[in-house]
Length: 361
Image (cartoon, rainbow, N blue to C red; front, side, top):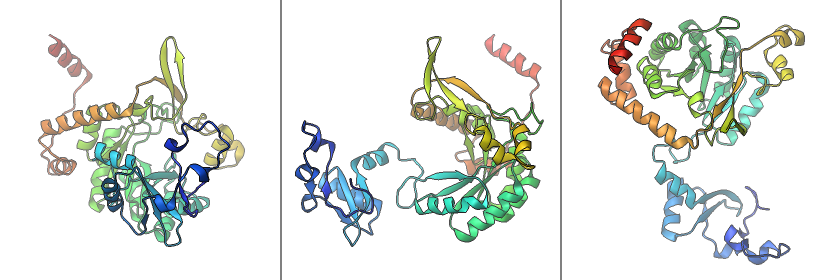
């Protein structure tokens, strides 16, 4: 079987073997040999490779090094994805951006190195309860070894928490604690802060250092996303919105005639087994870790189908809200916020109920 790094001899596709009933036939007898294949040699950009595919009208383009070894494979499906999803996040070579999460521990540095070698573009630090000192030290080590790697730290809810992470070199911050749909921190250890207040104060402080913030928790509608962006966030995380979609992880099952999927919190025991939970969060030995309750939970949500129409509907709602606010971009929205052009009004529960009655009347 061919793998990246092996010497390239030829190509075998499904069209070559679909109608061969005798599975003992050798691949060399059905493959298209290298001499008849369209190939390219590195260095070559993705744009040049795709242009070569278009001109040749072929389906696949193997990229080889000077020793004839396979280093990449560009397909026509890559070209179709660029056409169908022009706004997808890509690098200068038009390759999709990829992120990965690790714990801020020295033992994870080897994993970070392997992720960077595999092409990771942004590193997320997964640290419940912030653990600011560990994160700051870990960020310094990552930045020293990989100065060009973007690091997203958090979660934080105050400028005081954000300060050491920014000083350590964090490129972005996740803001939110106790406001997720699968987080019971406010009810369990009474730790957390309303997301709106947290985003506004942290974003205002972080803007002095040109560090963007990500609103993390409770963003399930386009209205919530617009509010977060208007309060200073540069991006939002949508766990509940995308839970239950075809692309989301989790087992699907039927209950009372409805198709459901599991939606697991990152600190739930379904994601982190009890023995790993103890090791990860313990500060006073294994017994102390077993007694701690981090607040994560697991539930079932209705299967929502593909994520594409959900994201399209949400983006459309955000665009309409931007027009109502008189802003074209997130940058303009933030400028209006910090120059006091954007004003917020607090509505009581009674005012909200009266407004709904008036609208329905």
